[in-house]
Image 1 (cartoon, rainbow, N blue to C red):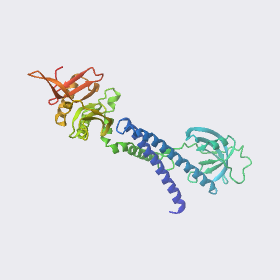
Image 2 (image 1 turned 90 degrees about the vertical axis):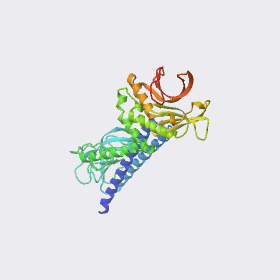
Image 3 (image 1 turned 120 degrees about the vertical axis):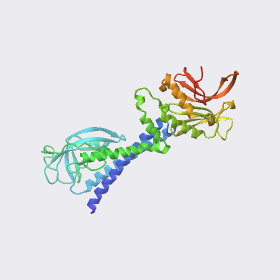
Image 4 (image 1 turned 90 degrees about the horizontal axis):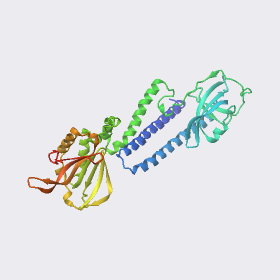
Length: 387
């Protein structure tokens, strides 16, 4: 492979890497935003997310403009590529970036040194100053892409050499059709044919998907993303059960048990989208710390609460998943699971028989939206308690 072949190959590889990184980081940005909204990432990360998104956008934009400016200078310095041209029509392309660059669609008639003049259309980002110099009928320099004959870039600086006398009136017979820029949508190849589009589409999906899923991978919530997608149709018909779906309910329970460990707790409540726990910190006996679990992500509260009655505390020995599941299944017989606000364990006072006396028991409580309807179940057996 000689030098002339190597340069365009390296250039194409660099362009591919640039576009691939854009799609990858775009997936990361959107994935991080979605994960934050779902509570899988700390809310404070939104500040980092906003700053990072703006910074990445500025970086990729500047890299792109630096490349196009450098390419235009390289074409201008290459012998035989620059030719005088007349602007036949010009319009704004509808895209403005960094408030300094505007996409311009420029139709020009090119008067090449050898061969008949031809008309072509250029879609190019230009600075505001350059755009002010472009008017219909004005003369510019057309820089033809040696790898894409008939297409190229426009420079406001006129080339040195003779300018045809009829440059302002000549009408070209040969016209190259306007070719819309494929931009980031074409990762491989120069021409947007069917094969190139298909391969590019597959690569874009893979890169964007890898970026999108990376925040879930970092926080261990890939399975939770799968479950959210699996049960998403419930939201469309206003029957969202959230964590009360069987598989999600078991995973939420296992995560809560793993987080609690051998510590004492005041309450363990499962909501549709999260689990709320009040736990006694190991290093602060007699105090309570709140924790919110979403998927596999745990967020602890900064404020610790004073405990006024240690008799309300209990351990995981009093918590049974089979009883919890039995209570949920029983509630589903005469209530809509989607209407449940929370279900969980608390240690409350209950009258015990046959000798009437007030005692504390770890029971299962189900409270429905609005708080006006509730059901109580025996914590060990999962049987419904009388009202």
